[in-house]
Length: 393
Length: 195
Image (cartoon, rainbow over all chains, first blue to last red; front, side):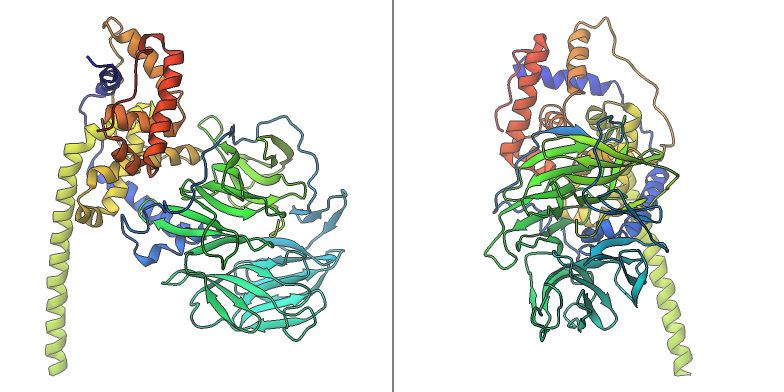
């Protein structure tokens, strides 16, 4: 018996304990297939998984784009494994960014602002706030009163890094509202059939005639021919042809997005570029789905590439420069947790709303692998995140 | 009249098409059933080694076969059914960890437990090795199962796991090193030579 045969035969003896039974019938498999088909349909409606859904119609086949790109540096594997759970005692302290919870915006200084209405997206804008429910976009003053409200057709909005401009989609194009009061709309060219707004770069006003005017918008096309585009205030578009869909664009020009997909699994590969218009990517990963850059652009949050269903059961913080996994938290049968809403705090740690069984909590994830609880969430929430972190955080 | 005749022809075509479609589906299901019949025990054994649990293995195989069923025509054309379904098993196993909080669909029937014979000469060795394999990170365990149970080459294992051959080497090497450290009886194990 050779040495490796010993291991092989030990595994075979263990596996042979199952015998040769056939517990599954065709009907069992067909029933499960119907459930998967329903889940995939539902998946296409989840904003968190939109990057996968947009590529599904393009009919990628096995062995084509599904093959991981080996031409660029591969992000190195995890170095620090943790458990994704709400069951920790460590005190995560107070968030350094505001968050919307139970009808109130909770400020870093401990103060709260009452907000009327049910909103699904939230961020700060100037001295006030901007919220959206997917039908209306509202600007709120420091006391939470609506000062401006417009219809919106996009599922969400984007805020510039300096929080002076908000952009969202309307039937007429990308509408921008600056803290100066300037409103400006850029028509979306017909090349982008089903636009989804990812990011806006600019300050105070996107009107090209304004002294600070001129913005760049980054959009995904969720139509039959998925792709990513940049669009200027003057209506100039550029295809970001390497990407099927962008995940995030950092203020320092770093871009992350999905570049290939395996439509059968589904899973995907992502790339990070130092600049959207650079010659090539800095690194790629087929293990992690890149989500968002930290405010200083040095780190990036990521989930597991196999995105199917609600929330992320695996959460990681990667080095944005080379994709090195700085820390990773994975759920388990003992801790069936999923992170549903993420945002970077101003100290470089990651905040996440985590669901585990019937409980929800706001957790703090540190690049050194630390996990601490910011707060437990009271009440029962079955699906959507009970806490909204700022869109741009 | 032309319209009526045209409609009749169209209706006849549709009926013919529907009949052909039904026949196609029947043939497709028959082919798939044959594949299931032939490969189910083998898939269950692989899934059992991946999951370490009989019922989870059945659930895993049910999902893998369901995904295969949805892609049957396309996968068949590529003539790589076994590789494809192994890949689903591995990926889906990872996803089970992710989605463990979700209410599981249950399989239609259950297998009886068949514990190893404790008096068998290799029982202690096997039990110790098995206990160790279950502690491996899931990617390492998948690499071990594919390399040493399925006896795939490093290249074939890399293809299924969607990683480089170097990663397979490092995963198996790491697992075997840990195994040597923790299981005295198999301290002499070494990685297979690349086939």
